[in-house]
Amino acid sequence: MPTAVDLFIPCFVDQLFPDTAMNMVKVLEKLGCEVHYNSNQTCCGQPAYNAGYKAESCSVATKFLRDFPSDTGRYIVSPSASCVGMVRNTYAELFENTPEQGQYHSVQRRIFEMTEFIVDVLGVSAIQGAQLPGKYTYHDSCSALRECGIREAPRQLLDAVQGLERLEMAETETCCGFGGTFAVKFEAISVAMAEQKVEHALATGADYLISTDTSCLMHLDAYIRREKKPIKTLHVADVLASGW
Image 1 (cartoon, rainbow, N blue to C red):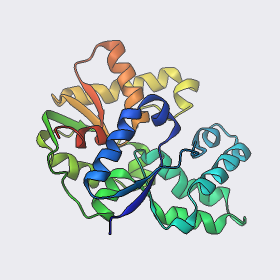
Image 2: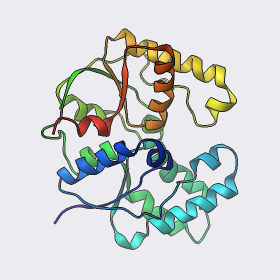
Image 3: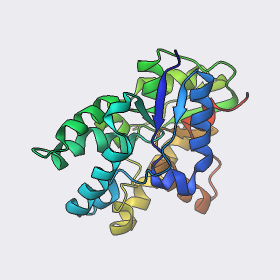
């Protein structure tokens, strides 16, 4: 029997990076997954929560629970560790001692970022046919590393891509400076952090800067484009779907 999964496509991926979402589907289907998509889904509530609007965030989070009901038993897979971290961790606060607490615990057990799902749940360490010539360096997003404990899974999958060589950069675990509304409220600090991250990446001689989170990559790519730096950002899903 194929492994059944529900896709959770974050709002900014849906609006700005739809190709990344489609590439995740391409990879999951190659691995034999039965992919489901609820077109009523919207947001996990993270933007409102980070901006201090807890009640509004809880309303959006309640809708998320309705969009991914526990009775399906399906895994929930997302191309964003940031949103997965929000659901896994912050929902515990939002739904503590509420009627939705049981639903939250079900979702918490079933939701995974794409690379951890492939490696830790499916037990797959390489995507057959994936090819991308060049050298890459990897950015550990704060959410992936600190909220979800994801470090080795994306590297393992990327290292198995034919023609791709990893070059670790200095301070790979340091924040890129995006942080959602942080980038708006503290623009100068945010840009300086992006500059530091990009300079560390460039120092490796890598062709690509890859991560699990499009939010980080969007922020870094804006700096790279403005400053005309010779490196390209890619989401891990786009890499794993390349060459076949």
